[in-house]
Length: 172
Image 1: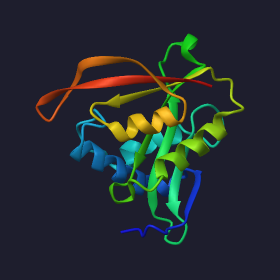
Image 2: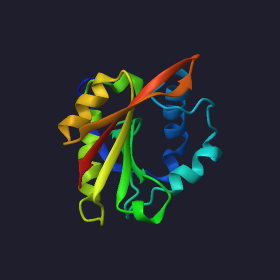
Image 3: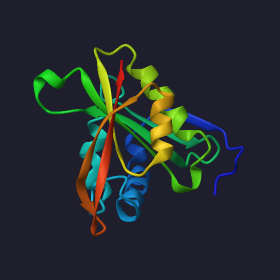
């Protein structure tokens, strides 16, 4: 378990991170309603996702790693909001933090790095969907200037129940 004093480095995600990023995401698939994926992924199945986040452009992947062990503490992405061309200046952002790294500011470091990386891109808005309840994620997004714009009620079914998703937007 990482110590509270762990030095954290945030950098672009690379091919060598694929296995650890897949394992982190699979935790949230198996254990939470934070993602609406319901079946875990193999690293090979996640490879297209990783490759869709190059080091430059509007779709980025930033990972937080323990400076000593290089273990993945979390990641943040910007991805296409919708596939239609008129949405090209909008992105959907997300953050996933390792379960044993929560409450240490990792999400804040990741979003800071992600939005700095996006600052020179031709983007107008960022959107984030937050499965409810998730007060920690709502607070993180609000700290970065997101505002709640609406909630889809009972939009996803996982673990035998329906979940709401609150939508947030941020000007870029």
